[in-house]
Length: 375
Image (cartoon, rainbow, N blue to C red; front, side, top):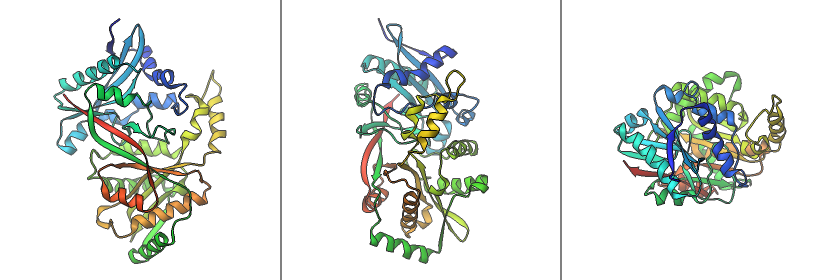
């Protein structure tokens, strides 16, 4: 039977859209089943602040009467305004190992974006570059860390077989728990004295104001990065509230000079170590079975992910990066997270940050790719 792709219009079809990754990857030892509630929240036009300015269409592909793939076509006007571009995006890509299904999905997304006058399709991006994005193309040896995507090794071949090519690679870095070298610590101490830097952990009692400080650094430090679009206040607040549930405030370090926030390091416990026990649900039959399992498993987390480590442009190269790195490493070790740190992502063509991470002992561990296709 021919493969068909149709937009998601009913609750039943939305449920099938959400359930597909669990069906495709349930036996993959590296697949970390996300909480279904989080998946629904991301796709909900009333609860996801992205939909206050952007739009998306969800599609499922059917083969022999069964759902065989899914995709989201995404229109982000804020991205195009910030970059003077006419880009569309695709995301939420899941597919059986069948080129005909992948092609049908990508064609459906491309048609939806083309009707809106867009010139290029980039992805996968879910729904902005501030969310999960990229397709894993190297580093299939380990499960993903928190807030990073995962896909089987056959996915890159599907996209490339449909004519998509590399737009940008994103690198994830690994850092083993070990004492920092004397030279790095000496540089950090000297920079801290010279710049009169104050480094402190996040103050949860002043959380709303702390979020404003972090957003100030985030918008400034990443403003010139490829693909970066500042989050709206509503988006940033939503992300902050979501992260507050899983963060260890001791692992969020703010650097200030004369009271002004100038750098931030955000490290999260790797919730993905615990998530598999919940099997994608916090409750079953009205009982908090998944929540109880997850609460117990969280206690065994020993890995972390450094989501952010950024310095405002005017103070880069002054040693603040090293001070922040050293302080964050100290906090991670002191809090008992001895299983390793994943840092990233970074852009593959950002030599300054990549050289710096290599110099302080990090190793390039995984590569995620943003693909492109002309419309």
